[in-house]
Amino acid sequence: MPPLRRHQLAHLSAAGWREVLDRTWDDELRACLQLWAQGNLPLVVTRQSAAREHDQAPVSLGLSAPTHCDRRRVALQVLPSRIAWFGEFPLLAEAVQQLPRTARPGLDAVCRALTTLGVKTRAYGSLGWQHMTKLKYLHERSDLDLWLAVDDVDQADAAASVLLRHAPAAPRLDGELVFTDGSAVAWREWLAWRAGTCHSLLVKRLNGASIEREPEHFPRAAGWARAA
Image 1 (cartoon, rainbow, N blue to C red):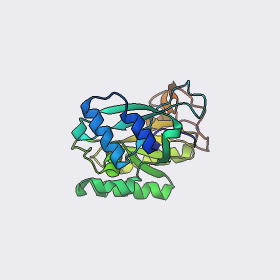
Image 2: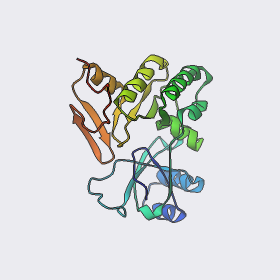
Image 3: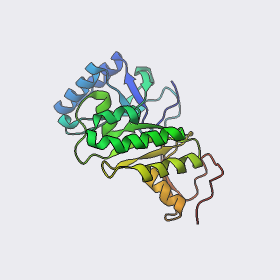
Image 4: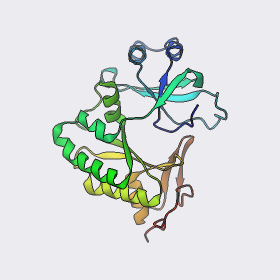
């Protein structure tokens, strides 16, 4: 099994879906899970237990249900042998087609600027799920959650600055800067921390989250020093 990452997608085998459907669910969730099994739709890797010490331990997965299932959240534990393959949320440039035309020009500018920086950007949350499943997730107040892969601090600075500069007034852009070791921070918090207007960061990792004043795990580059 490959190394796990937050927001990674997991497709279950037929045996895996049979085991999931054999569990006790209320009628609404059972109907939703049956829809997922029939369409071979993915689940998402969520926070893993700190006690997960070997590759054969159950994997924590989640499902964010569409509007017609009341947007419920489902948490599952699945054995690695029941995962057929892993995948990824769609690239932002692909997923924007789910949005109204009026919302696309600003996001197209964001995509172009991030591509120029070499930052791979994926859409998770409602936009990502709607693009993958073709089911209704988005509504008029939906925020867009972005997953931005950055190599080091300099690239994180540049990517966050792009979002601040080019982000359209609506929809609001949320999401995380994700470093090569899997640690992630909200891009707005990153900008505030780098500017010195806040003194700590919420850093999310596969096995949990922590508040850190001087994170030691981000790849350092010439721009590491915080602004005064």
